[in-house]
Length: 216
Ligand code: DX5
Ligand code: ZN
Image (cartoon, rainbow, N blue to C red; front, side, top):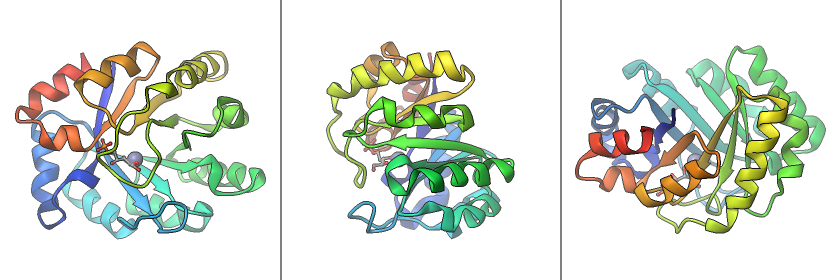
């Protein structure tokens, strides 16, 4: 079954508590939290204090996407704050440090994830799949919500689905960027089981129907 992970990047920051409730009341079981450092990506967003605050008001699965350089520096903070999944970019540090980062996340009992930017190949994440509970394939350049879906990522998505099936079939396969009810169908056909949606979810008039359509 597919899972929707609504991205709070598209929520109203001044009404974050309410917008979280809107998502969970609509049936969302996950929440996607985008963390940006203005260096790995040209934008700034939330820090671990937001994860800590969210943890206090919701039992939803907190799916934290770190778009930051050398994420190992903040693993303890995000794990202690209450992340359920903590995903780092394969491009954000050296191979040795990425291995160590995943080990550190797993040692906290938090589910570790690896994310790939559009130009990064499936082959580059292959060595890490065994240590991961989730692989996140970007279907836009990371940094901003509201961008257009890159359909040309579908062969890579399919390739990663096959690698997961061979190496670690329990690992989830997530997509992020430009997901709406139309592109959701495409990514599911290509092997995704976890779908992030920011703009399309928060713009949807009938959010319960949106969750049901994604998760059917
Ligand atoms: C982009 C973020 C996404 C973003 C998706 O860098 O990782 O999670 O919130 O937004 P939409 O669904 O609007 O493309
Ligand atoms: Zn994201």
